[in-house]
Image 1 (spheres, rainbow, N blue to C red):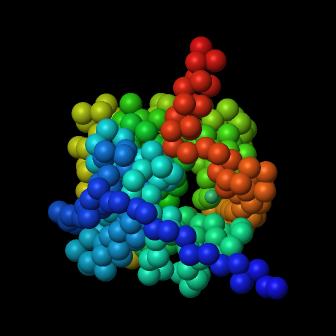
Image 2 (cartoon, rainbow, N blue to C red):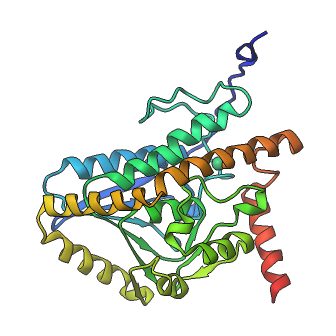
Length: 301
Ligand code: ZN
């Protein structure tokens, strides 16, 4: 019997709180993409991910756009992938951006492997490689899947209340799907960041070179758009070629191939979790992660 005969179509139970998970606007050569799920701290469901992909494509196709700013509505940039809001739509089918097949009716490890190739690793690579400069404007929380969105941008600008965190080692998983940690931080700091799952302050991230510029919260927007305006004065091809050049050097340094290897380990971890506990995330939903975070922080006090 082929395992293919064990297909089950999982129920899509998502209830969206908005039909506009991403807002889009253009002014003075700068496109602004705003994640717009503030009531759930901009947790990324597929609805938002595909809306982001559409918005990036729109910005690339508009010749009037020179620079793209990615930001989050509300108190936080992004709390990460949606692992527990009513709008969690992991079982919903979308028109895919890659040629991976639909995951929603697939068995075993194939289910998440196909999904994460498409919506996490694949999307992040598409966005990293789009030929216009991108700036992430980060306030408040930038956690796990939030890191992936900041990291695919060319520049990161943060307010002094911002913090960065990847706590997924608690789930038995070696970091988020877009494994850029040892490239964004030096390897020893990346290990500390992952081993402890602690928050890294914006100040520390700035010292490490992960953040380009740091502003007081009320100066963040002005600072970000001043930087974007300066870049927008440069010629389009000059910017595109420079971006390609630096991304190419990063890939020659192993970033792309390293990420492919870690993606496989990441999926071994999802499958291992499922074998042990029946849950790909090791039994952690959003609420359990928040509780575990609080406990861990309390123990270190
Ligand atoms: Zn995953």
